[in-house]
Length: 167
Image (tube, rainbow, N blue to C red; front, side, top):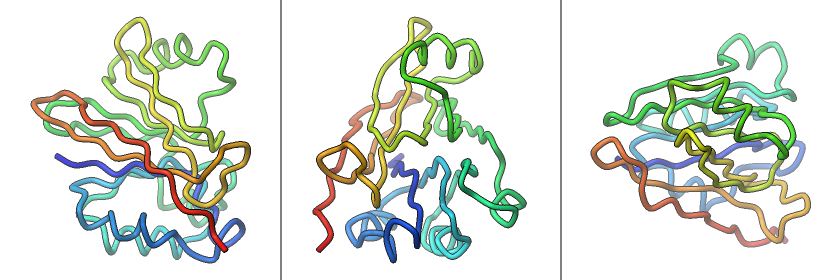
């Protein structure tokens, strides 16, 4: 099962539209995961229309319309893997402990908010993934998103995809 992970799209504030490389990858994914901060419903509608399956949450910058359509936390079992999605996990320091305590029933937690890619595993085995942002690189060299594979209930082939700078 192929996953595409993204977050913090912030359309149209940070970009007029999602990057073409990201949009072109959507049909190749069995599941698209978005960890919040859409800021517009048009991007949600676009991904819902193009994705085979969308698992998504709202973020701190998302208004009432998005909050009415999306949960704060999403959970799904994908090919035996217990996946969770949330926008905010707090400061980097102590993140593994906080997330392991808050989500003891998950194998993987996808989060956003910082726009900084993150890939770590807690002492309990919970894998934490932040795909960064495809539209706002902040202090990173490029904008990014992640892809991954699930095989037999295990996450594999997690790849961070840098996006070309917009002109």
